[in-house]
Image (cartoon, rainbow, N blue to C red; front, side):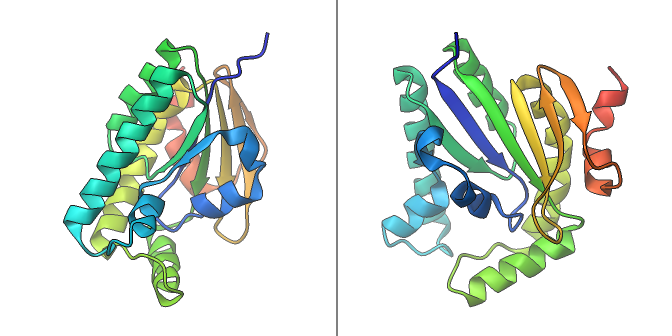
Length: 193
């Protein structure tokens, strides 16, 4: 019997293309969209205001908790640079959710910085360069911890254009592209198993 409660995570550093990948997929199958950036903008708040950022994140966390408690399928975006995602995944799994992650990687933090700068010129929100550099490294480190917790992970490289690199299903890794440095570095844990 297929599990109808789904928690889909779009993960990757700022500028990797998480929102774009979401827009390319069948959104109806992904449940309620929970995105702190979209909450920020829908309320007319300024992305430069740290209090507004925190408030939108708090609203997103509350929505996530409500979805988990009610058994409502949902999806979220994350840079995967903090540990709170581990608790969210564990809580969802305890409530019987199927957890899928789509991880989008880039070849370097400098490319992420360029993409965010371009987004700002197009009216989108910015992120400090030092935050992007820190999140790039933290995201790859957390990938090693988070991927094994998920029921399914699809890995994409978006350095040039979206390219599926690998799938991880029930802890079985199937690699399609072997020459992706960020992926090889991020998945070092598979050699320890």
